[in-house]
Length: 210
Length: 146
Image: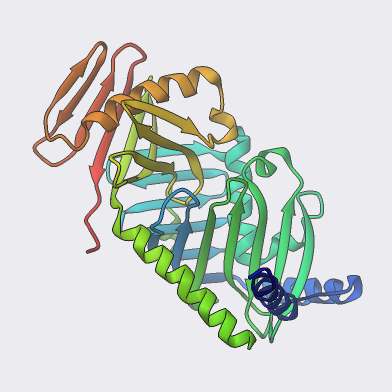
């Protein structure tokens, strides 16, 4: 029986090891340059997204979906449409959060935690987190034909919540395709970006904040 | 050989997961917390277990956990509290409020205990007030996916 368990564990672990290879420092530098170059050509982005949160304590996953609009350098609309309505709009340093029963306006400048959250969202969309050496320790991995980066938070506010944030890229290394956030509690939130469109006109009213 | 072992392992895990899921009843709520003029919105998910105990979590809309809770034998526990809220006096108030909420939320009856009131509103919302600390909770049931 013990042999069976050992073989089972070894087979699972070895498959896991085969599936991803850490890039060398030079390869990682080239990778980040490529992502950065692609991000610089992007003026706007819009997509659908799905979000799945698996919680250690619960048997059921929490699933939600919505739409996202982004315009360089700091305009973002992140809107959940199901199973709940919740809209987060960032325009410069102003943020509006609107749910069915509440609307709140926040100046990000005066709220350190919020500054970090908005920074994560923007960096995740553009891949900019890869360059934030002061915020994250970055490791890039190749898995089959795709790449993903593991971002280990360095700052206290993020370290208290996340153990690691993984950012997944498409094969052409031109865009982020998903983000996985591992919390210290063992919960995992995965966001997948779908139907992504780049550099299409986005109406300014999309980013209107009070 | 490896593929067979993996397949057997997956079947075992799937079997365990499905048998566990059958023993739980899940509820999801939009939660609005009003604390001395400040508002916080969140999602509250709870699962009633076969032994009548309840486990659950409160997360913000982005999925970031605020805290987990459990309820058993008329007592609530609050744990995995996000760092900015992780103070003994916050945990104490939440523990008292959630013990009261979880003992009454599925009863369909309004309830009053000391400075706490729970009211089932006609629109389906569940309103809970802690008059001592001026905290108000509104639980709005989310439509069931089933």
